[in-house]
Image (cartoon, rainbow, N blue to C red):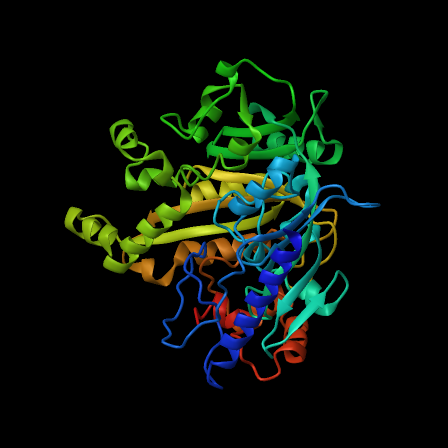
Length: 458
């Protein structure tokens, strides 16, 4: 089986190379990809894309290696849903599993993925042992930690190439996850607790395997402390949030909870955190009629794309006389000691709630996303719209967020819209070092630059 999988992979990479050579010189090179988890617009192109068919699977899981941790060789377009389906039967999972099912491994590495294990395992690219990258020159290069292309790849968003294969470390996981939801009224105490748990990996004498939280509003903050467990509970004790119940609401309603490991990994996907409410999926009647198999992030993304295409929400706002909306969809990393200041500022200036809180610690320095290794940051995620009136077209809230985050020594992910000028962007994301790597692996500039992708939407 493994030998055939490797042969199939080789054929898929050959097709990818052929599709590259079929693109006329001067035409942009980009993926012919059907799904996306990006929230920034992308320029339309009639040029053919790179053929990534056959690059969406798991090649091999090495559950019992000699002299090292368990690993998996995974193709770049493999979704985490498919990856987890391949590893869980072995009692294993990736060190970090981003919260949405259709995020791909290659996407999480060339972009930035995060989840509740990031406080102890960093970001997805930090568990990669080696990867094959299809570069702008049409070559496949195998790179490892310390290589210039490897270290510059995270946060490059395809501007340096595309991962065709990644070898990642896996970790053992049990059957269940026990949750404890702890409320905080004071953001200072919240931040202090995050730092203590990150340093000790314990809370109140119990081991913590996963850590994230939700800020529902000023004075209402929760940390969810997850503990892996193999204890077999009564069937009725295991919660199910794929039906009528909604996970994010349970955080306010329960002090403790229990999920299967599978349901824990996808607890946020069913309702796209809380964003499914925009489509009516949280209304009890609609929820009963909406098939459970269609309550998932990729379905909501397609609905959102329809809304953008036909400006449905904008038309309804105009009809109702509501001010024009500004879309505020961002994830930012703020140093944990500055988190209270950011949350207070965000409440006053933006006023969007809930927001997601996810601590992380980078294990080492990375070229294009310069987090301080060993320092605790908190990812603050907020996804929605704010009524701001005619000035919405100038993105005042997003620009203010960018300025505040960097005033506090934080960083902003680039999966959504950005508004930096070129000099600021280069300073924040190490533009000169990234450009040097790009000149080596994309000498003819076939791939769009990171600034053009992230800010100019090319």
